[in-house]
Image 1 (cartoon, rainbow, N blue to C red):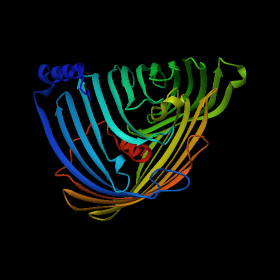
Image 2 (spheres, rainbow, N blue to C red):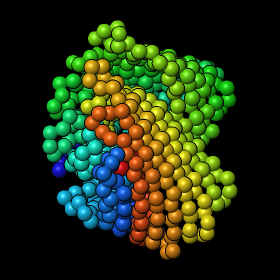
Image 3 (cartoon, helix red, strand yellow):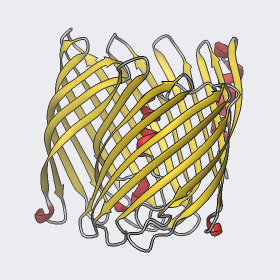
Image 4 (spheres, one colour):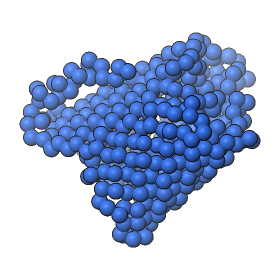
Length: 437
């Protein structure tokens, strides 16, 4: 497992030893342990002939953080072993490692780096079979701000999904991108994005190359609210059918804080295939990018989130190609007692895969959950949770299914570890609601 490449070692060697950013630092190392018991009434996620299973999961996390005057570095490593009661052939060591760093090169220029590697055994979105595979996402970027609301930046991301056995979903992907935003008067401005992606599959010859870009004309209503007119276009070149997308829209962008708000736009999505005009489509499309937390009282809060989008590759089912998705969810927490809280959550996600000639599939996933969190000691928490999953698909290779999951977890943490600032409340919520099990 070659996780840390030479370029990564060099990058952080320079960051630590050649930069004054780390002349005065705060460091923290926090280990934590957990043990969980999980029960499912539909282990193989089938429509009929369901098998239940009980699993014991032993986990640990090593968290290391360094915060300096101009830079920071966060590393985590989380191994986890799952011991099955009935299906011991799926006993497995899961490994997750992540590294995130940032450096404030100048007052207005920042550099970022991140890498996340996961070794996992899970059920394929495409076929529902258990597969062992390695996933990795590496990103490096630079952002420069030259005005109160004016900025530009570039980013490069490399990702892969590698399987132990030959698999149609195995891929490697390069994705450079750039953005630019400028306000040419107090009330009027624009922003634009440009990106290129190149995906190579291990088996398929349908390696897509996509150029995409968009531009928005912005009109400021007040310091928290903008209205916009947007035009987006992308062009995908691939062996099994190239296509172009044209997407005009209008909407508003309300941002009461840096990490919350609602972007909502309405428009039309035109998709033109080069195979034949009969495959061309146009459809109403709702742009949505929403996150908001409501603190009703000192004891109760509600967080909501929602996103829509489309792209040439869905990393969870790469070989299915072009997809349109939408997802929305909520998480409500009520503090019953000082050390006892309850929560209720729900999420819904739809994925529509369309590759002319070989894929026409729609998946709908509804998940509801409830839980209790008891913290009898500062270093001990006990979580009891229940989840219900309802999956519906028109794919020939997969069944519809329903699943009930119960879990009891004991977590031992001597103190709260420092966290990468990218672990925002929104990202934490979406990981909880939408990450495939």
